[in-house]
Length: 438
Image 1 (cartoon, rainbow, N blue to C red):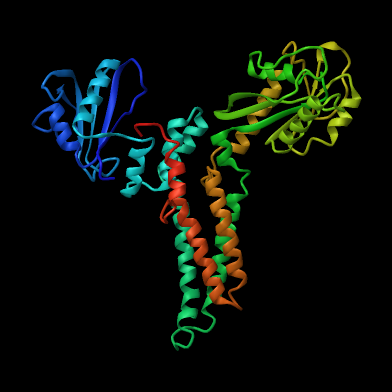
Image 2 (image 1 turned 120 degrees about the horizontal axis):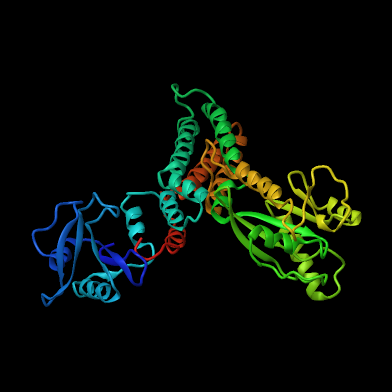
């Protein structure tokens, strides 16, 4: 935090313009050395010639000055907007190195913003997600989190819990005081119940936030040669999986990433479900069943002419899953209400299935009034807080001291979400995922 760091904030390589960022106590002096005096007005782009330590002009471009604490990092910061040729970039970076600056590590600018209390940990994670966003759904969720939606939720829970703790601590610390009502901790029961209900509601959302970040998982299951690979290729609009007439061609899981309804989707083709003929196929079937068990949506695929394949799928699909009767082009079709009848080979009927899949994805992942828990880290911390609060509530009447300790554990779990407590391992993990220059 005492050093001045620099980084190329735009992708490496040849480009029209490159942005080089600088942050730290020495940023102002280094800006003067490279761009000359007078120093530009804060937050106003100024055209300057950039010179090296020998006075030679390296380039001409724009420079911006952001004095702390009114900068992204909270420190004195500057940006050099130069021409994006590799030679120009190398010259400016070398000049900064000679001036005493150090190359920034991944996420160091954002970590400094966090350390200087410009943002909290959830907002930093939202920024990382916004940079990585590839779909509209990811962009909307990341922007909301970066704007503080999760911070406000977690801070609200924390404030409510601290208020409830005041009642518990009052009975513990002043049990004989006349102005402290008897069994004051009982007043915390209702607020704790409301808080537990709110946390449970956010946990019981089908992992919506995590699905938006990582992708909604769809698995195709069915007998060998039912047409799963053909359907995958049809939905992907490319030859992602090998298709042959030989049963058991697909041994391992083949994944395709799509965007449906503005959300990321991962569709997996799996090995055909049957009695395996060798150890390799047996492992493929095991993986298929495991992936299907943990999928957000299962699509059972059966040959439309085979009643036996339909029976085999009956025990593997649950409410909300989809059934596809494939090979419509080859002849008579089995009857099954709610099934999608199509030909993956010709594409007939696939459009209706795709529309239904997109609607399911939209229904399960679309934004709602309450912000979604977007990371496994968040979910585990809330689960820890919820367990502690449940114990706290159960012990209010008989053991207020133990209830108070559980309330403190819950507060600590909530504070780890925003980074209020010392969670160095969490910080290292979060900021190591950033790109250099952010």
